[in-house]
Image (cartoon, rainbow over all chains, first blue to last red; front, side, top):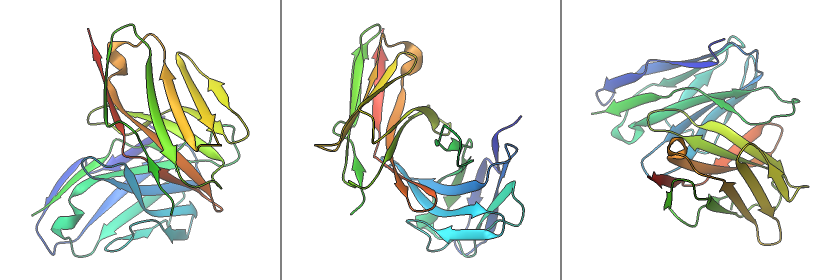
Length: 114
Length: 113
């Protein structure tokens, strides 16, 4: 049981390049989330999904797109990367209705945009 | 607006002592709170949670206290160990059909030998 995994672990992009971050969970969780974490700050929600085929905007959605074609995967896309998107990105998942409502987090992807 | 903040960005304690990490929240409608621990280079790890209909909840060496009157949350760690060194975040859960968390800035806890 791997939990929540993220690919890649590190990435360096040039301004204007595009990329997709992949999040996968093997816990059969319905809800999935993408956060970014900047130095000295807590995590901020980018987008989230409450089920396969559904997505919604979070606190800081601009410049990002997401897709949830399969229940176990949640993709985060940057169409035209900007230096302001340099950050550590975390994916999380949970299954509502259980006793514990805490989200399970992946190990993170460190992205640098030059 | 919706915000969660922490009183202290850093906290140093002696190994074996108890530590208390504080958190203030502003959304009176939130009914669920979580404490996370984040070690360097890793994702946040769930520690303990509490619902708004509770004042206190205890886990293994950790206790969370909730004071809804002053919108204050605290995490108490008993008999701290070197492995407790990490950044601790409180998170406020806004129930809007999905578990949307609002995180505080975080407190870095350092355990001195």
